[in-house]
Amino acid sequence: MSRNERLFKIPEASLLEHAEVVAEMFPTDAADFMALDSTFTVEYGTTIKNAVGAVTALKSDQVIIDQMAELTQDVLDSMGTCNTDYKTVAYFVRKAFKDNKAVQNQFGFNDLAKVRDSQAKMVLFMEEHAGTAMEHKTELVAQGCNEALIDKLHVDALNLKTANIKQEKFKKERGVITQERVQFLNEVYSLVKPLSDVAQIIYSDDAAHLAKYSLPKPKSSQNTPDDLIES
Image (cartoon, rainbow, N blue to C red; front, side, top):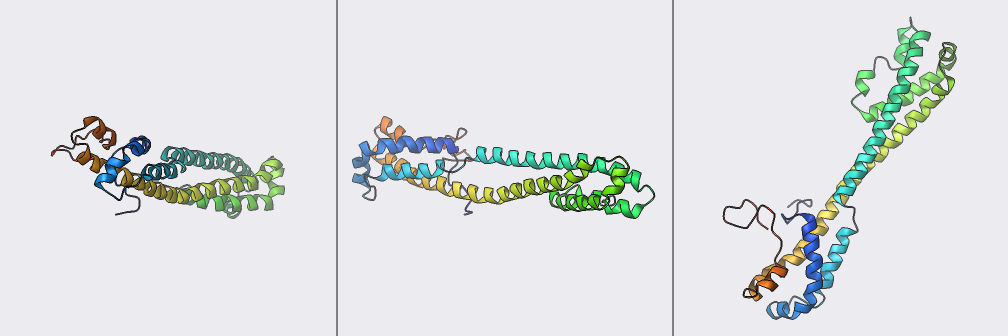
């Protein structure tokens, strides 16, 4: 089984809610469970609480998604700024070096198609573009280019590089966080599942108690022979 594979089919929120409730109820009924299975202890409820706490201490999937969206937007904003400033400088490059294709290509005119589909390539492109613009600063300013814009290209490149690194770093961290969260959730499930199983035996004639410890079922499943999924 993959370390990212969940042992349960019910919603995560339902599992955690059930575990928290069961952990509170167990001390009252501990003797019933221990009478059937001596591996249960009076501290079992606390063990469940600690397992739930380990899950809630981690970032939820939704928080991770939101953080990823924010980092992605930072990259897009930085790319947008680079695009605007590059196009502006390119206008003056064409004015200053309209008959010099070699210099125009130093500004990356012949490489645009190669960098459009890669953030990493765009970072390198902007760093090189900023350096080239500084080398030809005199000619560009003479044609009306704002000197501050030329100086800003290095900042544009750095901002894009920083945003890209943060995004890529988070992508790698996200996999670790997700794997750890699944492992902790599986631990919670492995603690409450035996309670549900034992309850089917010791509370077979006590519907109220049985309901308290029975695991919630997936919304679409009633655990019939025709169900594709089971709780």
